[in-house]
Length: 133
Image 1 (cartoon, rainbow, N blue to C red):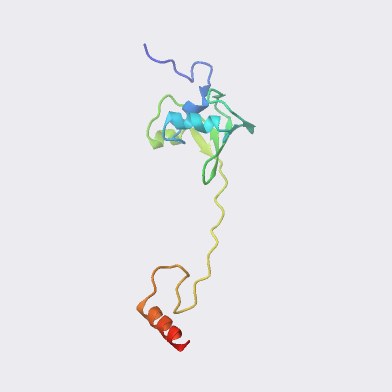
Image 2: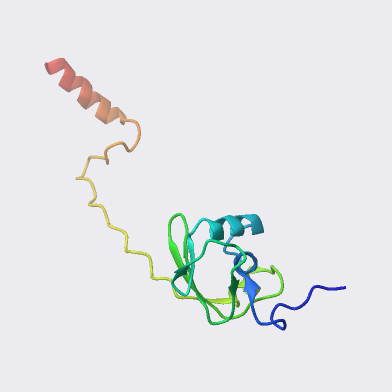
């Protein structure tokens, strides 16, 4: 006997299964931990249970370690397939990452502080400076 199709039975799926199907997490247990830790919101409502159901049209806000994902659910899926199949389950509405601050380059002939060991030229300058004192 095969498992029932979640799309045919009411059109909803557990949030932990969907996160795993959509390849947001590497394992289902990690998806359960993410859902129960309070880092997932469904339509702006914080959830605390991995058994909450989602349906197409819901918007998920997921706070990961270094970024925030905003995903609109397009389909529920029936298995954890390859990336191309998982990508069809959602639309990414995440804000673009902030632009990186470009650091000013060091003056000519100098390196950035902490950029490795001193060169032979730097060591000679240090030795000359120390011998003058």
